[in-house]
Image (cartoon, rainbow over all chains, first blue to last red):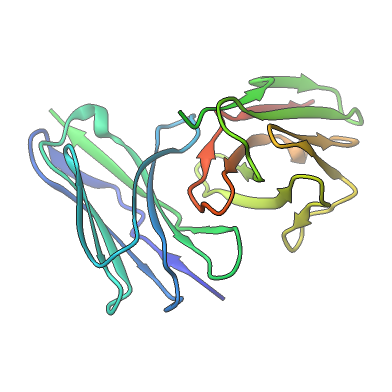
Length: 111
Length: 115
């Protein structure tokens, strides 16, 4: 059973701090990794994708991938209350079209 | 780019009726579309994967005769919940991906309430 694990949270951080969200996956041959944000009552929206080991930055967001450790993370710099949402980690399943989603980490940014 | 729409955004129906939900990719051709269901405070649950012109592939435990999926064109997939019951009340979300791309773009979702 291919799995994607996330801490459900909530992760509470003060405004302006760095929020660090973590995700581990079980399938060693996974090649593609995604972070989605889901506000309460809304559908997920894509934040970033990452395919190679290392860091990928996009504005205040940085995705980090370590395939040897089967670990992917998302850093949010200068966290804002508007970043409060559930963050879903998704991993491309080898040889299928499907993404395997984690259960999400709820982030709360307080003023 | 990569905009996916869903219609209707919400629907209330009586038990026993059928409900059709449309999912459209507005600015790209979606070779593959996915249908998810999400109950309150729970994670996304994949129901089925559909490829244009082919029969949908359903996940284990999802009744294909109850949840009819049609993907007749590269921009449109439909999900029909047949003989809906209160336990089918949920948030139904579609997503779409382009040819040879794994990135999924989600529609805004459809809230179904069966009375």
